[in-house]
Image 1 (cartoon, rainbow, N blue to C red):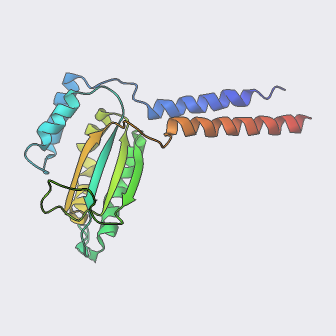
Image 2: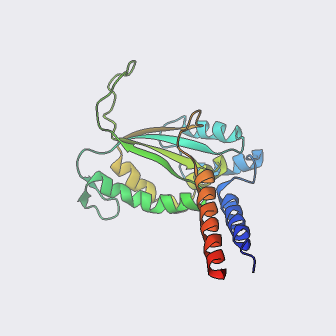
Image 3: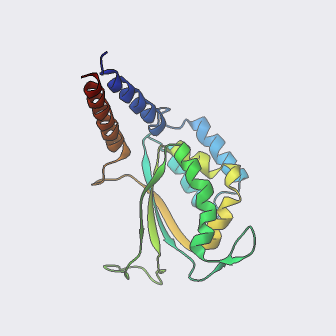
Length: 212
């Protein structure tokens, strides 16, 4: 019996991965943008500032259908904060888990994932033109499959309560969407393919040895 069928299985699995990981629906249509912005207004999105909703609308209107990465710079609260659910005073990072427990599974279902997270280990270096700069705690780099996915997550009513944990734990933050110009770390498209190819090769060798 031929052992080459394992490569067919590997290809099918990689195809399923790409079906989940890649945006196949293309850019947002004008009608989709209008609907999503209306849903955001109904969900009171835009509490970060008067221009936040207009910025989101412009970002969605300029959709190119490609993936992007959101840069998040965060200052965690220095001391204990009140848990929005119980009122109990807890460390800020522990309160933040109330948000990430709900957000990360939803992000993963839409093909997104954290690409990089790093905590501060020193003071500001090579910085100018900024007065009263907060003492940032960490940064996160999050991959989104598409702008559609971001918008759907933002206006999803199931996360209405989750944002309370984030606001309680992070007194200050800023974020903006980016597209990497240089990225030395290999993305999942490469390493998932390599892992599947390695698994298929090892399975074929095992089958050949068993047959011999």
